[in-house]
Amino acid sequence: MARMPYVAAIDQGTTSSRCIVFDESGGIVGTARREHRQRYPRPGWVEHDAAEIWANVQAVVDEATAGYDVAALGITNQRETTVVWDRATGAPVHNAIVWQDTRTEPILRTLADREDDIKRITGLPLATYFAGPKLRWLLDNVDGLRDRAGRGEVLFGTVDSWLIWKLTGRHVTDVTNASRTLLMDLRTLDWNPDLLDALGIPAAMLPEIRPSAEVYGTVRGGRMDGVPVAGALGDQQAALFGQACFQPGEGKCTYGTGSFLLVNTGATPVVSSHGLLTTVGYQVGAQPPAYALEGSIAVTGALVQWLRDNLGLIAGADEIEALAASVADNGGCYIVPAFSGLFAPHWRGDARGVIAGLTGYITKAHLARAALEASAWQTREVVEAMDADTDVALRRLRVDGGMTVNNLLMQCLSDVLDLPVVRPRVTETTCLGAAYAAGLAVGFWPDLDALRAHWRPDAQWEPTIDKARREREWTQWRKAVARTLDWV
Ligand SMILES: Nc1ncnc2c1ncn2[C@@H]1O[C@H](COP(=O)(O)OP(=O)(O)OP(=O)(O)O)[C@@H](O)[C@H]1O
Ligand SMILES: [Mg+2]
Image 1 (cartoon, rainbow, N blue to C red):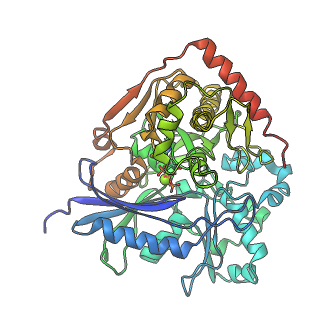
Image 2 (cartoon, protein in one colour; image 1 turned 180 degrees about the vertical axis):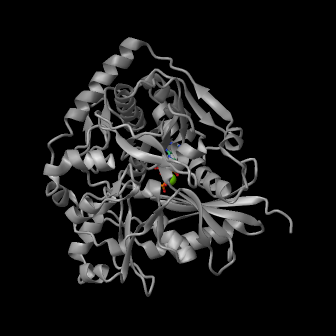
Image 3 (cartoon, rainbow, N blue to C red; image 1 turned 120 degrees about the vertical axis):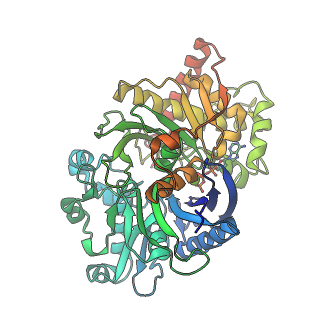
């Protein structure tokens, strides 16, 4: 039989589900995408319908792979979003609670006296971001769920786990996703019994933790029947992998709904003292894992969507660049989009967004500019934390994600960071990373060196503004951030 020449990856994201088919050189040959509904039942709550997501995933897989012989399927996903489903019927028992959701604040307060211990074990601060407390909320609030969970009748999973179960019938999760639950021990790569106990979570409902590149099972039914599901990574780890950041010190920042800067720190977890997360970067088969330090920014592209959907300032995200470029600067205006508190490096659940520096002079063009700059300033906060935590000074920043088509933003980023910014030719690095993992697991690609050889630069930006202006505006940004704190 002829060798099947393609690998497909599902990217189940916060706003949409994608499927992309890659050839052996890492080039894109087929793609499909579908958005799902964002549900905001109360201020600070965000939900998705996991059944809707599953239907969309099936549709995009069928559409993108039509006509291609696929050797393996990889999965990447919005992280931390929490699904519980019925083992017998396969139906979700409640809407999925999305990573941005802040409802678990009171649950976290009950763990406050164990914060240092939890950080040492999991690498994570106590924040509403993570999955374990979301699961606890469901156990407390869905009628009869705790009893059913104890009997193993309902199953928990992040979105990777939900999709692998739907596709193959196996209840597993990959180690990068598991590292975002507040339940996994970073060093043993297993669920921590004390933490399960502290959060009151029955072990019977948890998936088995597996490497990121491994054959988990084969697809049952449909057009993809028999295709191995052979890789899974949380979306940001997938982008790290897709950008070929395999050496300690190599990193990337992905600009989508939020933005996430990850730097590979090698074989040992580095515990941050400056507000970064310690997380698993990837694990290939039986090899030891590579760890990463992560600066997670909750809202960047989502602010552009908010200007579009909630304010009607623009009709589409692609209009923001021209609007922002119609003025020379922000006019003194700063937007800090702390919609679900502030993530890295602040971790302040009590923060809410502000628009600071408003005067009669400010136009919608200044607001557009301030919205783009918010992505750049938030990146600088994370880069400074990374510099303080490690001795690997970033010499340039590799970027990817939907916002990186915005050249004004790329220039602004380089100016604010005082670093070169480089965009690769394939900016769908999230999907690419998941495809790489699956392709490695089935021998479609031989090793990491073969993958590294695919990486090609597309464009690079150099800093242009002077130091005095950069530092003056940085001071203003930090003042604006201070004004978001202590709000709730
Ligand atoms: N030209 C543009 N300028 C600025 N922002 C843009 C532009 N085009 C798209 N965006 C923003 O990029 C984001 C989409 O990027 P991308 O598709 O990478 O997001 P994502 O985070 O992967 O989505 P998901 O959360 O579904 O995974 C949106 O928030 C959108 O507002
Ligand atoms: Mg994404």
